[in-house]
Amino acid sequence: MTLLVAHFLRHRRESLKQVNLYLALFLCGISFLATTPYAVFDSTKFLNDLKFEIQHYSTGHAGMEGDSLRWYLNYMWNTAGGIYLLAVLGIFYGYAIRPHETALVSVFPLTYFLFISRFVVRNDRTFLPVTPFLFLLSAWFLILMFDKIKNFRIRLLRQILLGFIAIFALISMAHPLLRTIEDTRHMMTVDSRETARIWIDLHLPAGSKIAIESYAPFVDPNRFSVQGFGRMIDHEPEWYVEQGFDYLVFSEGMYGRFYRDPNRYRNEILSYNNLFSRFTLVAMFTDGGYEVRVYKVR
Image (cartoon, rainbow, N blue to C red; front, top):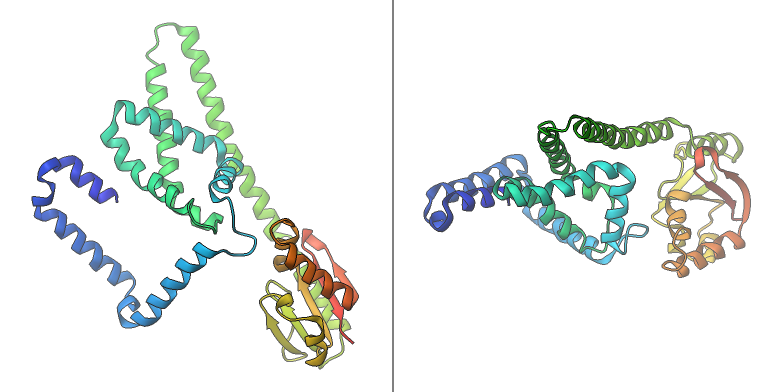
């Protein structure tokens, strides 16, 4: 997208007559194949996986779906709100004074943001590709404002505005820094997936048949008979009895997403409650703010 904008801004009406355009597009294709060779060597799987992701983002992913535009805006504000605000101001100001240069930097993040906001599925990693462009626009806008203000003749006004910009810039950078520190501390904290793993290994009888769902603690397959499921509610309670399971291990990483949005996932919550009420809770762990439940089937 940026390549095309740069080319058409330079050559205008003569753009389609320039051989460099077609050469650049050809080299883009070569670069893609050089970095993704199995798009050709295993084209069937590549196309099937591409189709799967398109359907996935268009149809939904439990806990990551609905109202994508608002979710991305909230995510931006909660992670680096000041920086993204400066980037938006930079885009508006840039189009007013330097539209060509601004278009080169902003065309991708604007197009991509509108594109991902139309999908049902939304998450932080999908937003990630726009961040370098927005950070660049934010820094550029700050520099423009600094250069403009430092030429003010009224010294007091100049000092006040420069001080305001400096404080705002520091706060904007401190916000994501504090979030990074908080997230790092959280990731380094031992949570229930580890404490439950140890408890299961020490307290459940060897050879027990155990069902685990996604994001559950590791259960040693050499000590137990382990079978994994995406969601425990993919089967009715009696099915687990008939299959001879001894224990079910539930993980907040899976069932928690449904309870956080009860209006959307009413049926899933009913199914989990049915499982919770049918079997006997033998252990619950909440270490590190992460919940794991172990239920006895029989």
